[in-house]
Image (cartoon, rainbow, N blue to C red):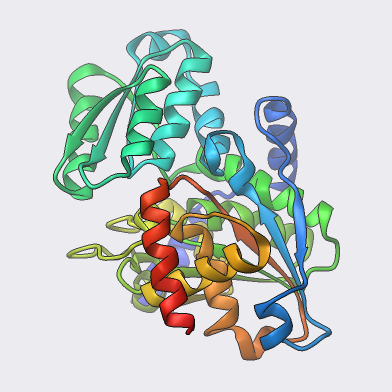
Length: 341
């Protein structure tokens, strides 16, 4: 019965077609940056992988607002009619999506209320306020999501979801379109997973362009709702989220993103917080990139659970964001250096 239920979900979940993704990429032209790619040739890549391995970084951390999230937020707000724009939007996020929603709302001339956990980076909170959004702080991610839903009901605001829904995937899928054009012939793409919006969109683009290219999703062990969903054959909810990668701290998976990921993502893997910090250290030491922990997950996966099967292959890593304050980065960098030594 469980297999039948999952098959029904997969067959009924609409996913972004290549035509739709390409049309949306045209709509976003000039509003988002086509972020560059760079081949990683030094340091840990030379030390741990064979010489035939190609590691390509998709530098989405250079996107406006510092992460890929702007692509989905702009796509979602562009779909609103005038009445919805007058009522405004709401989002729940630890920071990156909130920053993107604030930026997109300001660009569209609508108001945004953002529900964020108190532990969110102060730099992210300030960036949201600087873009004119009203920030509401809550004790947990769960409380922030509940408050956002209440604002939809009470004020008629439109939820700009951080990871779920066709419009989100239509936006994030443009990252995959760019990567496949920039680095032809990839054998695999590794994507960070929070709620699955980025992974689902990228995987849909990658697999429709080249079905032979493997797509891997990677989560922190303390925020592994999608991995559990894959294992259980249905969307999973976490009792608690515990990871240094706060922007990957989705407390649950939802049917749409799960359905798209289940269709197009070949495998989910988990990495520890120590592995994330170590990868963050390597990215800084070797590539001179100051990233947030979420952006180090693909590197951690390649050097950890996926190393044996991807050594010698041509691999794309999604470096998804860099919104972290200097003090927080220094702490994580020191932790990663200690693990490495």
